[in-house]
Length: 280
Image (cartoon, rainbow, N blue to C red; front, side, top):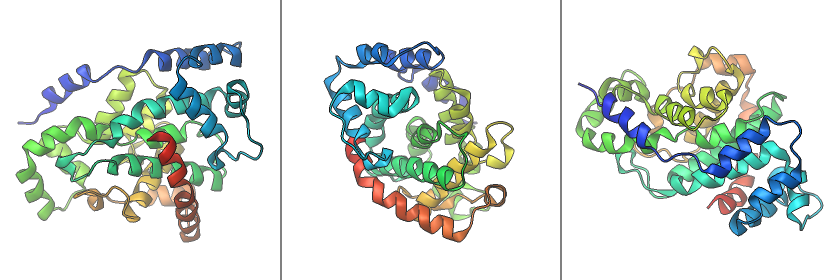
């Protein structure tokens, strides 16, 4: 017997996406929207305004000249980056919790998520993959399903430990066998409920089985590789993080080389502290 029905019920009760995010999603589909409209939406949230200014002036977004006004910051970032920031700030507070089932301490998941998001974006830039526009947000949200599954992992800790001790399959297969669902699929279901764009949902849902992706393959491959690189660097491994397997097909399809990994790891570490402060 698995916990699938209970987990599905928990997905139904998972907190909804904030209304501001929903409005911004609608604006992304409106070619006539201007930055004044967006400014009117966000300017009454002082914390969000401050973080938009910080992000617009950050090295992460290639800031050269400092901007001091919300209007200028919004213009610099663009509507898609604004949506990414609002989603990231909304979700990041949830990523600071400890997850005893997975052996993750407070802030471990946040650091792993930021690292994966930045690394995925760096990989996309390095490999000249321009079409994966939502790569940062997909990377940041890729392990959201851990929040949903952790209480069930705690209940079945003994079975998980026994399975890991004799592990022949990947850890996500153990999740599937014991719980009836793995954390990648659970995360995809949450994001589908939030009505996020199909590329983000697909990238999160498929990041541990990227070879099975039928759409948005490049984004899914990049999230998988960035996730594996983060774990190999010891960022957010917890007790089971090293029990996942790198997909050889992804490495081959994106043309990934050892020097790429070394470059991305270096660039990612350079940007970690700045973004972690913004998203804390």
